[in-house]
Image (cartoon, rainbow, N blue to C red; front, side):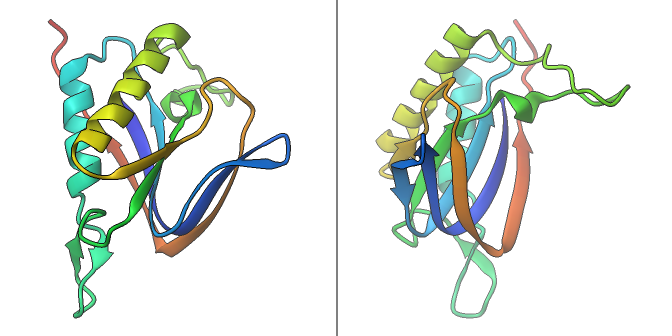
Length: 150
């Protein structure tokens, strides 16, 4: 599982020009489930997203997480995050999980985040979405966890 995470002041998903979901201060997480991902990866990603200390304290240091600031997470499935660009100029998406399984993993991730006490809004799996955001900082991180496949 891979994620591009942005610290935001505002983020929203639009579908056909209409706001589908929106958050204020928090995290926008573009998520790709990879082939072979399982519950361990989902647990790890949920724990990381909830506890990632990228919000500033009174001294301007990254010491606060999304819960500390009463923020939200906008979770958007995005298979292009798994785009493989080692050779050529057109990305390959062979590392991305099959759609049905990917959808289930991302729904499970949203549930695990909610279990940890953080509000989660989502995009629509497989839909053509427009994402609007105000990146705060800017702060943008790439996160991935690879477990040995068993």
